[in-house]
Amino acid sequence: MSDGKSPSGAPWRNFYGRKQGKSLRPSQVGYMEQDLGELAVPMVSWEENPDRHDIKPQTLFKDPQQVWLEIGFGGGEHMVHQAANNPDVGIIGCEPYINGIAMLLGKIRAAGVSNVAIHPGDARDLFDVLPDGSIDRAFLLYPDPWPKSRHHRRRFVNPEFLDPLAKALRPGAILRIATDIEDYVRQTLEQLIAHPDFEWLAEGPADWRQPWEDWQSTRYEIKALREGRTPHYLTFRRR
Image (cartoon, rainbow, N blue to C red):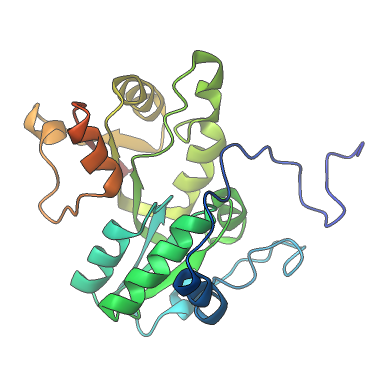
């Protein structure tokens, strides 16, 4: 379309990566049918909210002291761990991959946590409707590395994603990034150190070599360690 928008009014945004892998198990189909609707963040889609009015993320939870955001929660190991250990915090997870959503829903049931919400789609659509300064902490853990040079612009650590994330973070909010890909570390540091809204908090090598004290390893990290790759843990603060 000539105006760069879809029939719903949404801007055309290229989406790269898979939305579904192998078929879901019957139990996972049940999780999707029975649980996702109740946990999904409302008013994010362009069909529901074509004027892109801000949502109020605090209202998704019962009296949260803070609201955290995990971008691409994979199988949900870290997100459920944080929810269980921080019951006074509301945690929103973004993930377009259906199999990952189904895995998270199973873990939510098993852990019995109630302080989680899910956006089953593109993080950029959620950024559209998050009020400025509404997120107290964000996690980007083992994002898709897009290893080919011509695909580096697809990585999350680019202004297309970092600029709206910075707006959503309150001043002083923490952004944690974990990756086992050295070139992803390079691009992350290049982009965030140069970004006016972020500062890197490392004071020595241990600050990126050692995981955070409340860290929960993910399936992607376990695979990286098994294959001999070294995790890096980067911590930034919103100026």
